[in-house]
Length: 303
Image 1 (cartoon, rainbow, N blue to C red):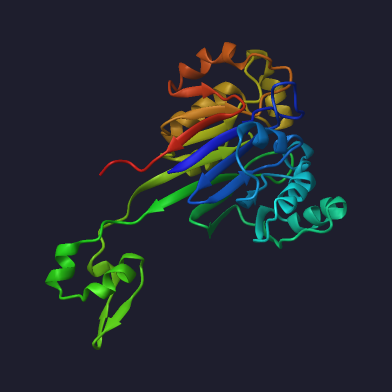
Image 2: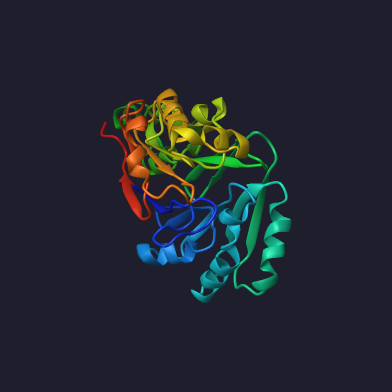
């Protein structure tokens, strides 16, 4: 199971009742956070989730509303007696930005590992997560992220027995390891079926709509996409500041054939996003106006 929580939905500045845009997931005892603007700690606390298991932090870009909460979060994690390393993923220059922010959080009881993204598309596998980072189109270098939980194929007991594979080799084969026993080499493909459908969540904020977003969100169980502007007269602002409208997000969701879309990263002037949802659902019916604390538990499909 993958727990997904949209911690905040506000763009540019936090508002009363609306924290800055951030996402948190939990899987197999490891938590992942995307973006950490001002107030993210409060949003996590309001949700009742723990800071200590956050092993991975993905930063979309270096605008303050997406990273200014980092020093406080690091200090809180340190005060929670965390000693395991924290991996931070983000655009080129990440190590310098993190180092600068740590001037006010210099002493931590855990190591920080920075992974800097330089290519249009990169894949990182860590703690059971497969993270696909893809460059989007904003005023500064910015990345979207697809978070996937892969699922291996079924172990074919009949094939293992038929091939005379010793039972003490089965577990290692099931975990993708090649095994040698009595001078015979056994490989996983001898007993493992094709990989089954896993779980996929795609997250994208601060971008104009581009094909790469739809390509990376293809067939996602959940697509969380910025909808900076819901009003029809804000198309010019969206183009000028390289953001996205509700309608443009809906068109991406339809193109990507995702199961469900949540909108997020609303302009501070957009007080009641739900009032503009008809223009979205006319294009993509399985869409929701995201709100702070919105949560879903995603599981594997039944065979």
